[in-house]
Image (cartoon, rainbow, N blue to C red):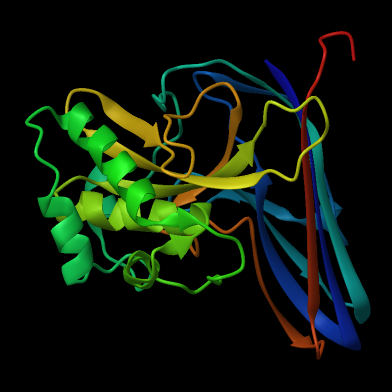
Length: 269
């Protein structure tokens, strides 16, 4: 499937940002089941950016913006060809060993509720255990927009019983780590079944299973990723997998606006 993506991020400031540095992880990787056909990033001074791989293997650009700006606009767009690999993520540039992804973070630290959720998974088969966990997370956390925020932890989302894809992924990751599996957060795009462009920035989880490697699980939709998914970044949690991270001097009263469109593209386009 050929998928076209447009990802626009705007930062507006009441008082201009005098100097800023942006770390952009806005380039999807090519690997088995995903091939980037075309891709571009538009941003102030992107032509002088330093391109590198971060500690997880994500493609990143470090951009310095020396002049004062009251708006910073960053646009990533292109087309990606995808295949359904039943959730298997193979052929990625893996810099960190799998054991790194057992590390707890403030957003994935387990509490008694997470531990109880993990203890309720009974299958002896490791893949079946992950499918049971995926369903258990979705059963316990209703998909509700606007009740959580960027810093909501897995424990908080599970306790409240409401959240979005970020929260589902965090709960799944936390519980999988309690069970002894390396687990990581994946940030990307999701193509809905609609024939119209959709707001589809999405997140899911991956677990490393001995003898099989990394396999994705999307609790929000109760499926393993298919050809409707485009991978962008990955990390320990949503913070380390963030597509854009930066710092600046000045720039008061920031207003952030993000627009993402994902659409199936015909081969002739």
